[in-house]
Image 1 (cartoon, rainbow, N blue to C red):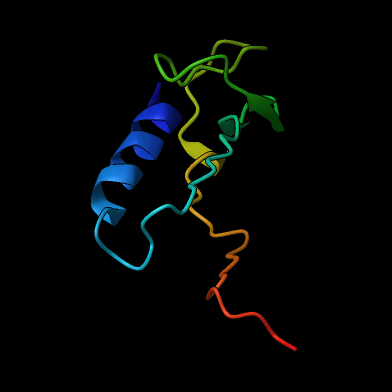
Image 2 (cartoon, rainbow, N blue to C red):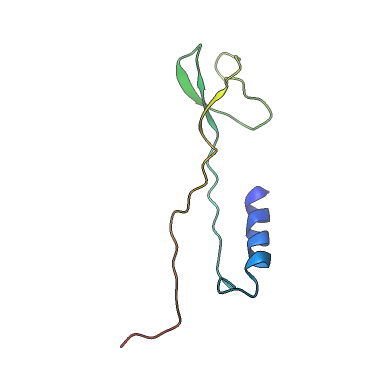
Length: 82
């Protein structure tokens, strides 16, 4: 749901700018937390509970899933090079 919302909003905010017609591609990473009692990292099934799927303890240390990175940008200025 969130990637689709971001892509939809991108089309609106880029309209009338040099970025009009560009495409936003969103890759969603799973949330990975570190469980201190288990001593291991675990992937959460969802964002409703930050409990370790192995032992059920609360996990406060997020190892992955809060990133926002730009992986690449491609720009076509429309000029044909000889």
